[in-house]
Length: 296
Image 1 (cartoon, rainbow, N blue to C red):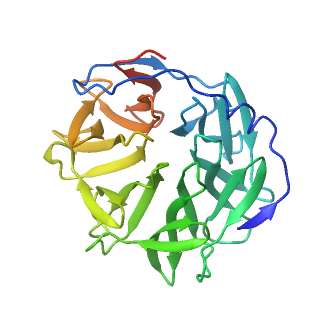
Image 2 (cartoon, rainbow, N blue to C red):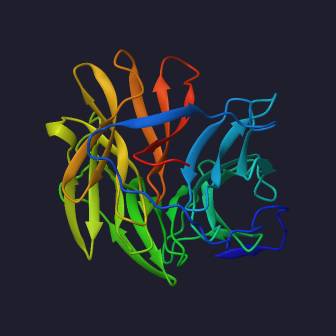
Image 3 (tube, rainbow, N blue to C red):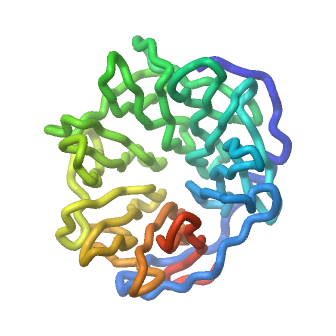
């Protein structure tokens, strides 16, 4: 990984404070939600993507010129950031120890590049043995293991980077690509695979080198967003003409819907079963922070 020595203020403060709340995930689907609002500047079209075990949220927002910036929200304070020299930055995951990964673009280059922020320092993530500028990092754990996707010679590959070693992740038969989206501290990976360019997507879990399907309630299409450090998988699936949120734990699926009449999507989860979810109502989807059988 290429390093860029530029500190990001507020980015790593207090990430090693011990979390104290505990909760058991509800298998009844009984969850409570509150509206999720962001302070400026992240209050302009925010897209939250991850929630760590200390309650820190990362994501991206658009400025007045429709330029994407990464943001970190922690203890009510927002830090906005861009990868040095980039024209566009998106933060896509944060570990319990505050490591952030995401994507960025540079002027004159087609495709995305991947980055990591660790201890306030930006690094470019590169794929060993592959020359590619179209690289994304979607998930990171406290060990610094990164999952994502890269494109080489027109073909998309899922990857796991662990201690500099590359593992290609390709779901069997997924001719249109495999996209890992999250990895927890136990090394369990979740993501999505596609059987054709017109496929809506199918969620998977990868553990100890073995793939398995995540198929909520017999759904035809499903997506996995994140996996927590207790092994809870969240995402969405399509049934009855609507997209529904779900959680998957120990072989049991739980539907998580914000409304019976509009679609729902669960974007993130932490080990206390706190979730970030959204209603799918149009071009700007209302955002919510929620809990299942627990209080914040």
